[in-house]
Amino acid sequence: MKKALLDIRDLNALKPVWRFKCCYFYNYFLILFRRSLLALAGFVVFSCNFETKKISSEEVLELESQTLNWKEVDEYPAFEDCQNETELIAARDCFEREVAENVYAYLSKQQPIVTESIDDTLYLYLEINSAGRPEIDSVKIDSTLNNQLPELRLWLDQSIDSLPKIYPASKRGVPVSTVFKMPIVIKAE
Image (tube, rainbow, N blue to C red; front, side, top):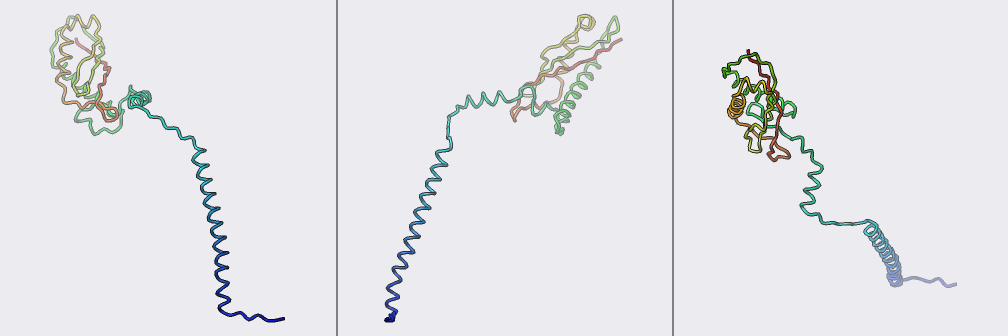
């Protein structure tokens, strides 16, 4: 047998074949990877059920208004003294206490003349509108109390008008109107 002597030129001739084989497998795996990636992307896109529906602003508003609790406010009306109250119940109590103190102070200045002693409770429905203006919505006065103190309704109106500045209640940052039912005890001898 003859020994074949390989020359450097012969080795250089082999390199392109080796490169070709390597590039062939590399391109094959690259093409296979791209196809599998494309198939996977197609599977992901088509397996998800993309349903887009345009919703009008009226529908959004209607859905939101159904989920909101309209009987509660985020912040109660407040006087200057009550604005530092952060808890909702404490803020309500502070507001009601301030209104009651102002109403009782005004009523105690009046000097009614009565024929019989009075110990009765009336219910004052006080509305604070969205501008912070207080108004008497209604008053439930017993007929005997109304006969004894015919000017009571006028005094209540004047006491509410003399209240200091009120900051209105708010719901989601928007000022809203609120109504409070307040019992007022009338005692006179």
